[in-house]
Amino acid sequence: MSYIVYPGTQNEFYTEYGGLPVRKLSVFNLFIIAMIIIVIIIIVVAITFLLTKPTVTYVDQTGFYNLDLLTDLNNPTIKCCIPPGETLANTTYIYDPVANITYSRQIPTNIHTVCNTFPNPGQCVSQNTDANGNIIPLVVYHSTPYYTFENDQFVGCPTVGTCPATN
Image 1: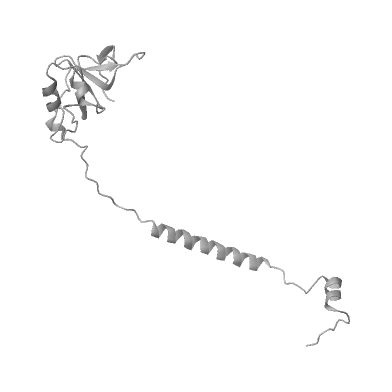
Image 2: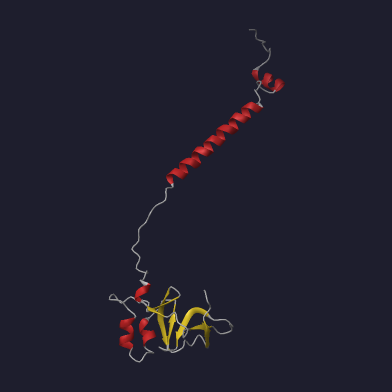
Protein backbone atom coordinates (compact mmCIF):
# COMPACT_ATOMS: atom_id res chain seq x y z
CA MET A 1 0.00 0.00 0.00
CA SER A 2 1.39 3.35 -0.94
CA TYR A 3 0.63 6.73 0.52
CA ILE A 4 0.75 10.10 -1.15
CA VAL A 5 2.47 12.69 0.94
CA TYR A 6 1.15 16.22 0.68
CA PRO A 7 4.01 18.74 0.77
CA GLY A 8 2.10 21.44 2.71
CA THR A 9 0.66 21.72 6.19
CA GLN A 10 -2.43 19.97 7.43
CA ASN A 11 -4.44 23.22 7.27
CA GLU A 12 -3.46 23.72 3.63
CA PHE A 13 -4.53 20.14 2.86
CA TYR A 14 -7.94 20.69 4.47
CA THR A 15 -8.31 24.00 2.62
CA GLU A 16 -7.32 22.46 -0.72
CA TYR A 17 -9.29 19.23 -0.55
CA GLY A 18 -12.07 20.08 1.92
CA GLY A 19 -10.97 17.66 4.61
CA LEU A 20 -10.49 13.92 4.74
CA PRO A 21 -12.56 11.75 2.45
CA VAL A 22 -15.89 10.76 4.01
CA ARG A 23 -17.78 7.60 3.27
CA LYS A 24 -21.32 8.51 2.22
CA LEU A 25 -24.36 6.60 3.43
CA SER A 26 -25.62 4.07 0.97
CA VAL A 27 -29.24 3.04 0.48
CA PHE A 28 -28.47 -0.21 2.27
CA ASN A 29 -27.11 1.64 5.31
CA LEU A 30 -30.19 3.90 5.43
CA PHE A 31 -32.43 0.82 5.22
CA ILE A 32 -30.60 -0.85 8.12
CA ILE A 33 -30.85 2.33 10.25
CA ALA A 34 -34.59 2.61 9.52
CA MET A 35 -35.12 -1.04 10.45
CA ILE A 36 -33.25 -0.58 13.75
CA ILE A 37 -35.40 2.47 14.60
CA ILE A 38 -38.61 0.56 13.76
CA VAL A 39 -37.55 -2.40 15.91
CA ILE A 40 -36.77 -0.07 18.83
CA ILE A 41 -40.21 1.57 18.51
CA ILE A 42 -41.92 -1.85 18.43
CA ILE A 43 -40.02 -2.96 21.53
CA VAL A 44 -40.95 0.24 23.42
CA VAL A 45 -44.63 -0.10 22.46
CA ALA A 46 -44.67 -3.80 23.46
CA ILE A 47 -43.10 -3.04 26.82
CA THR A 48 -45.61 -0.24 27.37
CA PHE A 49 -48.52 -2.58 26.62
CA LEU A 50 -47.13 -5.23 28.94
CA LEU A 51 -46.72 -2.74 31.78
CA THR A 52 -50.25 -1.33 31.42
CA LYS A 53 -52.18 -4.35 32.61
CA PRO A 54 -55.80 -3.66 33.53
CA THR A 55 -56.37 -3.11 37.22
CA VAL A 56 -59.46 -4.70 38.70
CA THR A 57 -61.01 -2.65 41.47
CA TYR A 58 -63.81 -4.04 43.58
CA VAL A 59 -66.21 -1.51 45.06
CA ASP A 60 -69.10 -2.31 47.34
CA GLN A 61 -72.08 -0.89 45.48
CA THR A 62 -74.79 0.51 47.69
CA GLY A 63 -76.73 2.10 44.83
CA PHE A 64 -78.33 -1.16 43.63
CA TYR A 65 -81.79 -2.05 44.79
CA ASN A 66 -83.86 -5.16 44.58
CA LEU A 67 -86.64 -3.85 42.36
CA ASP A 68 -88.94 -6.67 43.45
CA LEU A 69 -89.13 -5.08 46.90
CA LEU A 70 -90.33 -1.74 45.49
CA THR A 71 -93.96 -0.88 44.73
CA ASP A 72 -94.64 -1.58 41.06
CA LEU A 73 -96.21 1.43 39.29
CA ASN A 74 -96.50 -0.16 35.84
CA ASN A 75 -100.22 0.46 35.49
CA PRO A 76 -102.44 2.63 33.27
CA THR A 77 -103.22 5.18 35.99
CA ILE A 78 -99.61 6.45 36.10
CA LYS A 79 -99.06 9.70 34.22
CA CYS A 80 -95.78 11.18 33.00
CA CYS A 81 -94.57 14.72 33.28
CA ILE A 82 -94.87 17.16 30.38
CA PRO A 83 -92.28 19.84 31.17
CA PRO A 84 -93.10 23.48 30.37
CA GLY A 85 -92.77 24.24 26.66
CA GLU A 86 -92.76 20.55 25.69
CA THR A 87 -95.51 18.66 23.94
CA LEU A 88 -94.59 15.08 24.81
CA ALA A 89 -94.42 13.43 28.20
CA ASN A 90 -91.17 11.98 29.53
CA THR A 91 -90.53 9.62 32.41
CA THR A 92 -88.16 11.80 34.43
CA TYR A 93 -91.05 12.45 36.80
CA ILE A 94 -94.10 10.23 37.08
CA TYR A 95 -97.33 11.10 38.86
CA ASP A 96 -99.49 8.58 40.64
CA PRO A 97 -102.97 10.13 40.83
CA VAL A 98 -104.23 7.32 43.10
CA ALA A 99 -101.60 8.06 45.80
CA ASN A 100 -101.36 11.75 44.74
CA ILE A 101 -97.53 11.58 44.76
CA THR A 102 -94.93 12.60 42.18
CA TYR A 103 -91.87 10.35 41.91
CA SER A 104 -88.52 11.18 40.34
CA ARG A 105 -85.60 9.23 38.90
CA GLN A 106 -83.23 11.65 40.65
CA ILE A 107 -82.48 11.34 44.33
CA PRO A 108 -83.91 14.36 46.14
CA THR A 109 -81.29 16.50 47.83
CA ASN A 110 -83.16 16.66 51.14
CA ILE A 111 -85.86 14.18 52.10
CA HIS A 112 -87.11 16.45 54.90
CA THR A 113 -87.89 19.20 52.39
CA VAL A 114 -89.74 16.66 50.23
CA CYS A 115 -91.69 15.22 53.14
CA ASN A 116 -92.76 18.64 54.50
CA THR A 117 -95.53 18.69 51.86
CA PHE A 118 -96.97 15.34 53.06
CA PRO A 119 -99.72 15.05 55.69
CA ASN A 120 -97.43 12.98 57.95
CA PRO A 121 -93.82 14.12 57.40
CA GLY A 122 -92.35 11.71 59.97
CA GLN A 123 -93.90 8.67 58.31
CA CYS A 124 -92.77 9.95 54.89
CA VAL A 125 -89.16 10.30 56.09
CA SER A 126 -89.14 6.82 57.63
CA GLN A 127 -90.58 5.23 54.46
CA ASN A 128 -88.05 6.96 52.19
CA THR A 129 -84.86 6.39 54.21
CA ASP A 130 -82.97 3.30 55.32
CA ALA A 131 -81.55 2.58 58.78
CA ASN A 132 -78.53 4.82 58.04
CA GLY A 133 -80.66 7.77 56.91
CA ASN A 134 -79.86 7.31 53.21
CA ILE A 135 -82.64 8.19 50.79
CA ILE A 136 -83.97 5.03 49.14
CA PRO A 137 -86.35 4.54 46.20
CA LEU A 138 -89.91 3.63 47.02
CA VAL A 139 -91.40 2.57 43.68
CA VAL A 140 -90.32 1.03 40.38
CA TYR A 141 -91.52 2.00 36.91
CA HIS A 142 -90.22 0.40 33.69
CA SER A 143 -87.44 -1.34 35.66
CA THR A 144 -86.14 1.98 37.02
CA PRO A 145 -86.23 2.92 40.70
CA TYR A 146 -88.03 6.16 41.54
CA TYR A 147 -87.76 8.34 44.62
CA THR A 148 -90.58 10.22 46.33
CA PHE A 149 -90.37 13.77 45.04
CA GLU A 150 -93.49 15.71 45.92
CA ASN A 151 -96.93 15.34 47.42
CA ASP A 152 -99.46 16.09 44.65
CA GLN A 153 -98.46 16.82 41.06
CA PHE A 154 -94.96 18.23 40.62
CA VAL A 155 -95.19 22.00 40.10
CA GLY A 156 -92.44 21.74 37.46
CA CYS A 157 -94.85 19.70 35.34
CA PRO A 158 -97.91 21.85 34.70
CA THR A 159 -99.51 18.96 32.81
CA VAL A 160 -99.19 15.20 32.68
CA GLY A 161 -99.92 12.77 29.91
CA THR A 162 -99.72 9.15 28.93
CA CYS A 163 -96.23 7.83 29.44
CA PRO A 164 -94.22 6.88 26.35
CA ALA A 165 -94.01 3.14 25.70
CA THR A 166 -90.23 3.13 26.08
CA ASN A 167 -87.74 5.63 27.37
